[in-house]
Image 1: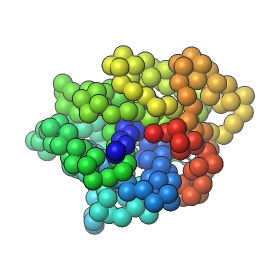
Image 2: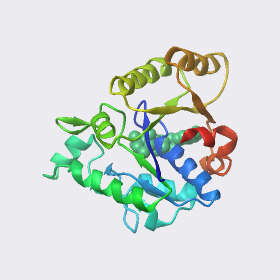
Image 3: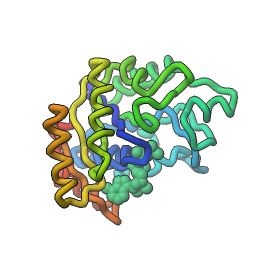
Image 4: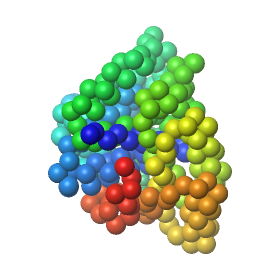
Length: 224
Ligand SMILES: Nc1ncnc2c1ncn2[C@@H]1O[C@H](COP(=O)(O)OP(=O)(O)OP(=O)(O)O)[C@@H](O)[C@H]1O
Ligand SMILES: [Mg+2]
């Protein structure tokens, strides 16, 4: 049975791609067949085999082969997908994403999906990332920052997920530096939201080290 995980975050730039790369690296070390799927990429498109910068980062962190990286839409503007797609007179076809995921689930042990930004980001003017997760009916992993402000952002994100009866496997706290506030943030997010903290990932100048040692920072057995 294939396992799928939708990696979302409390914000853009929160570390969704880094954590996805770390999870892919850990799964590949265990000989699993892994696909990483970024349906929609907006901005900073690259030349070469992998045009999505997020998928390129996943590749750099995990060593995953290009053929296991999937992206349907690449828009030039670094903006919310609804606007970036409109600028190119295109509209994202949700059925195309659903069909792509179904094919991946047939072929791979693990499918890691990264959305765009946070849950309330519009994919079209009528349809958000939250709607997509709900429609795909896949479990979610939330990536949150450790620092001041995270209690509010994390709790709102979790409430939204629960409001749609979406399964949430847990939360990973990223950019952790420790200290009174961050240690307490970790505890209060857990108790306030009744949510497992599946990992605490330190801030690191060398993000490749995070991927190489991810099992030290996160409980891979509970992530899925
Ligand atoms: N634990 C960490 N330590 C140091 N740098 C980090 C860490 N996590 C992420 N970063 C850096 O922060 C930046 C943003 O991370 P990332 O691209 O994973 O965010 P994202 O949530 O996927 O963003 P987007 O919404 O654009 O997809 C990257 O440049 C990455 O190198
Ligand atoms: Mg990303």
